Length: 191
Length: 395
Figure (cartoon, each protein chain N blue to C red):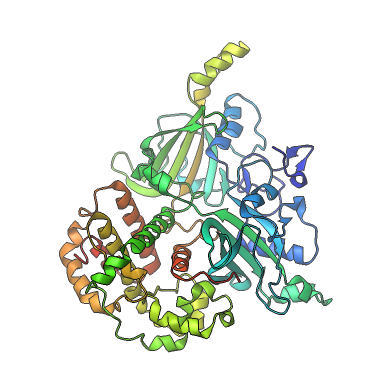
């Protein structure tokens, strides 16, 4: 399951979903029992895996791993636990600004709560908002109320100390210095 | 919105949701550009051919759209158009402006073998030399002339014709002012950013430099009247200026073709540019290769950069017009060793409370922390020492 090789794309294409895509094209379909296209994100049972065990189990792309899980408050793994940091962040649709999901940030601690030691492993856990969409759907379709809260989709990655992830594709700090030095220089002809 | 036909079938994008074209530099050079040069067909035609002189950066977005997913960067092939029939300079002017090279070309390696070069360019509106800098950045990748494989594949003798192909990536420089001000973006959230977004330190440094430039312009005059003793005249432009390194650094924006810049200009630069150096080992091996260079300099150089930022922060909170000299041709930074002892003393007395005396706004705390994490990671071998005097140096 490692990588997105089962999707037949030329070199250079990678699974880098936006928050919105993750919610709309994957989590929402999962929750409504529709098949995901492409079906690349696997189900993992709750949170029993330590983040470094995800390789080969979750969908891995670069240094990020994606998987579905059943929603739970018990985020204890074999060797540690995930602890919530910060406040939940709404995911809004770019089209109409409507709230389509909620993103929670967690940090992995090794050991037993509350005495674990913090790691660089970060999780973004996305869930669908309760109430709003499910009630509107049950009204319009008349079907039994779907429990949207069952599933979450998780993105896990190890935060790198140097922030070198985009070293090739962004301006480096040195580039920025050069850019600012250009201002001091008289602009010469483009070469 | 019409989809790019080449990558869609019957109006449906062939790129599934969640997938983006995010090639590595190696993929760009080794797979795409080499296929282009060899006239091989490229799957899905993801990278299109563009006449750089006819398209403004903001139009390239539309032309180079891949599927229907939102993009933050765009890729295209371009054939370099010579500015003059006999010269080697490339014409990168459009109707609205021009692309200007910045920094030095970066060597691209694959399995520790040179495969190509990357040039960074900035788009300016208007006509040189009065262009106005924009946030549009281009990375232009070209295959290494010495790539043996390339020569083999082109043994027929068409090499000379194909050397003009480059593969380019354009993007808008990230502007972090908004996110810094956003109430949602707490300092904790800042740590949580996904790797998709650029590291914080880049935006912070950009912001600092931006504001530095601004305050510099405002303060030049007062600086002239009130020459601050903090910035001493350098004793001399030291021995390394002869080695070519000094030259290389100071003329970096233009150095792409050293022959092109006039000798008189270079001579002036020695006098008019601030004495301001950076360690290059981690960043640009080409600079390091081009000159013999004592790496112990690194510590001092960062101290210099450090001091600039300190000065800037102080000028924000209080007076401190020193920074003006950054932009002032008549004034130079002291050579780093002049102040080293002073800094070390300050460091020792202040390292314990360094965090508390920052300006009170959270934004600045973020910036400082991020900048330090950047500097620290770049210094590796040096201690944290010179960084800690941020809060009080120069008072």
